[in-house]
View 1 (spheres, one colour):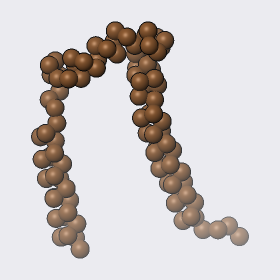
View 2 (spheres, helix red, strand yellow):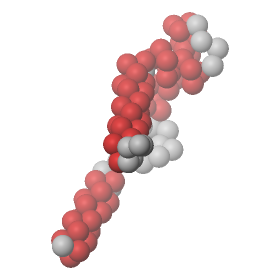
View 3 (tube, rainbow, N blue to C red):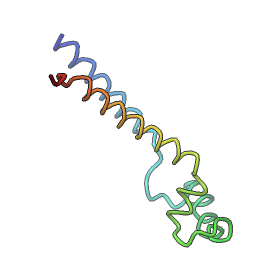
Length: 93
């Protein structure tokens, strides 16, 4: 069983490294996010959202549904952890 686990981990590691080679390079000023998305957020962020903080404008207004989904996943994972811990406790007598 241990050999199978090591083989699966090795295969997954290889797949992750192979997939990471296809990611866009960081700090590329000619990439689409740097040439289209970021300038729009910087120029129009206050006018469109009214938020003084740029991070708040992006997370709360532009990516609100995404942030809500991430928060829901984290809350659900925390609740599941609490339920697992509670189910393993011995009942008090």
